[in-house]
Length: 219
Image (cartoon, rainbow, N blue to C red; front, side, top):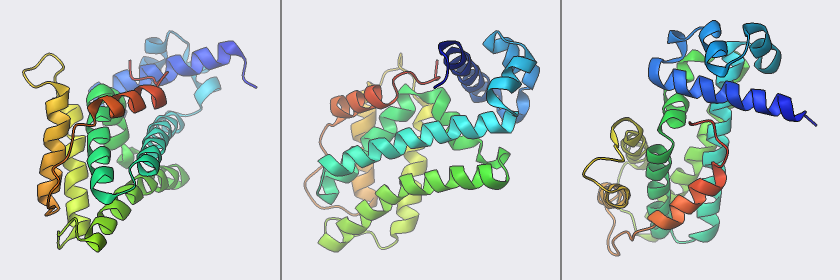
């Protein structure tokens, strides 16, 4: 079992990495800068986290595991395809609006990984997208969704919802509830959905994000 000091150092390192990489990208930040941001020496950083690529793989895998767990919860509690897709969309939007630094790193730095590290992260990403794919397929099978190109629609929706991390401003004119519900309405139109219209799931999704992302390094 890791000692309390080790856990604290690892959390500081991950938080520093998320802050710097979200602003300047993986290749724009050196090990020495990461160590200084975390208040540690470079040797100590290597001791706890290994190479910079090891640290990136760890940050990305942690973020994706949280997304997978959240999507699993949605699928357990929203059985029908329409309500499930509605909740998946709003969950993705809220995650990217509330955890913008972490999600920008998770979504934008895959190209910096190589070998087994890249493979492990891609496997987690595919596992998360599986929930979207099977939900859309179930909706098409039941006649709720009428989209002819489900794969392209899925990728387009994920890209649209992911973009929230880049542009959403908590102090801006749009409340987060409108942003989340608006994305769900657009998703239903892209998928050719009939009634019913998506409903507001913001508070339920916010609670899920708060529970699963508690203690994350997106500071």
